[in-house]
Length: 175
Image (cartoon, rainbow, N blue to C red; front, side, top):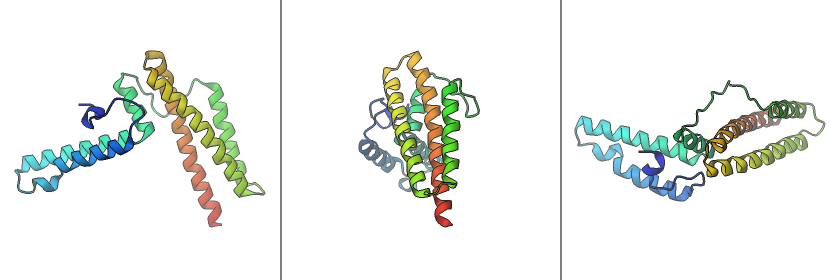
């Protein structure tokens, strides 16, 4: 049973997170290990496994990038590993530009303004790419799924870069 069926929701990139959460709580109540305290050891083990499966499914469906990857894998799209290089040279150049921009923050006369600028640029580019990927996933054909896969990998890069920005901000504020 796929995760969307498990939670009795439509297979879609756009998920009603309140409905997902509500269905999650309902499912967890039915299989929570505490309900099986007086059951056999095998029934207890099955309850724990079901609870873990529900938790895993919930974590994937509530996170947009994980949800996109799950949907693409369910469609048979082969996901390249993280070390697989991008064929998109313009994106590789953009990665270098963004990393340079992040490095420049450390040497900026106005660190706060430089951080805000980096965060703004990353946020805008992430949003644009995310909307593009959402449309490609909705289109759901071999070509759009392949491009959505590439865009998902790009979005993961932006996500990692945002973590680096947060770390940089924390280190600069500690000084």
